[in-house]
Length: 472
Image 1 (cartoon, rainbow, N blue to C red):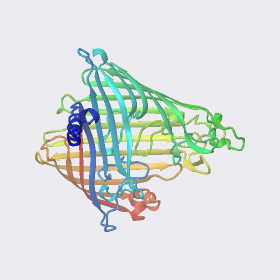
Image 2: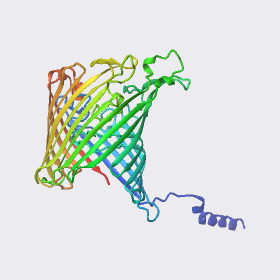
Image 3: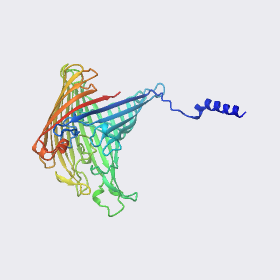
Image 4: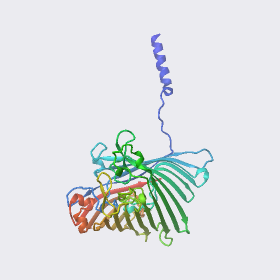
């Protein structure tokens, strides 16, 4: 009898196991994944080892050429939702993960647990509904890389990089977005964010939030010409309201402040040239706390310089950014990609040189930088291309002399897809670059390469690199 009851329990348990445990059965096909990545190795004959440093000038990022950039990876899964029957709305949620090494080591020799090792961030996590109700209406909410096209060979998203966390509404040719910029990264020197927050009862450093409102309007001038008009308003609340202890210095608790941005970009498609040929010209002017745009980035909320030490605001601060970017498909064999970038910025202090910000920290209150360059891509065959690049950069911080760099690069490329297109990827490249620095750049080690290799007139870089992207 006991044996029969035991057998009955086993049969009952097995027959009902699916009712007792909820198993994950992944069968959803409404998922797509995009990715961008670059990876490789490099060698410096000056130091007989890999140093992982680009030849560009300091504080310029990849402006001046990006062929020496270090390993980087983005993975962006997108989840698509189906609306009710008859509804033409397109709905998706997207997450973008980026991976990079803080110490410029290669990915294979780095991990998240090592000192200066692999780091991960989430620049995107948003939900978007497009073509709502069959109308040309879109809305989005979340963290998003909300920006226009980039100047690819300098890795520079110019004119309208509104990346951040917030929301946006788009209707036909009009785009509106609002960003809420805040951080607790107290290593930042971006003024006037830094202040002491003691409302919690424990003194702690934080970065004060600002609100950024952006509006853009596209105007079709004709079939080939389009104009985009840009306006921004930045406002930062009063930091002094956070202070409830009289001993806290006023200098770290700035009053409310604001800034404005205006700009325009003209895009023309060259109809008489091969398809894909165009020119973009943009000009943008920011005032007050909206004078950002440095380090290879163009985000206006990255305020440049120091505040006025008496008024504790950025009244009188400004930034002017001009970019011209072309892709010219000259023939079946040649594509030319020239560009020009000019930026001048000044903070709110009454000096051009070093000015004090927080706790004795000093920053330059004015800078001028100019870069001109070009890439020529020669299609030797469907599978083999030859890249040649030349870049000239100069930068002046405060009252210092100009630091200059002239760089020439050659990169034979294997293109496994067999496409004669400047945008064809993946690329497998051998990269050889050489740069010449002027006296001031050489003596002040005004380059990531020089900071490692020492005071030298010439810098060199050799590497084997791969780059790819897939966006659905």
